[in-house]
Length: 203
Image (cartoon, rainbow, N blue to C red):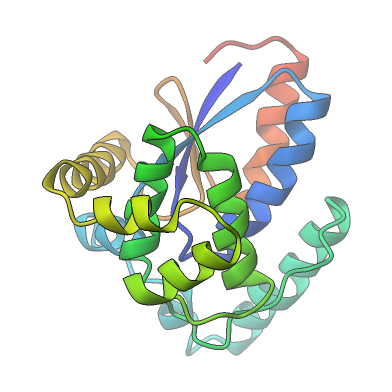
């Protein structure tokens, strides 16, 4: 079963889903394809607002979403290194353009591990091309190639196209998953996808 993962580093839930997906792909007949999109663009195009704004006046719901639900998910998937980024919300436009460059040059897996760890385990401030370059230098992960390409028109256009296409299909936030044209929103819907794969359901 093939599933598109509408992805941006900006979402802590995207980090949690990525960690869960690594195990799910080993135990279930699912292959996740990461589609780099700009979360801010999805929010704008879908007229949505991030939870830290919408839940600001609902302390009980905010506590549940960012404390209880997070902890349950991390326990379920044995995620132990997550740390809320001290600089949240983070401008990830350089990072997500870099993800497209990495996909095109076959080092996407190592790239997202490095960047996700920097953001959501080490709490680094990665809101500029310079900060990204420094991080990639430390890990010997094609730093010059990434920085030379993230400002190219074709990379910018692909990110815009990915983001627009996701919203046209129904996305309004991250994490969003598409199995064919069927949409699943939120990290908890990974359970539904696992059940579908076990039943050999097609979507």
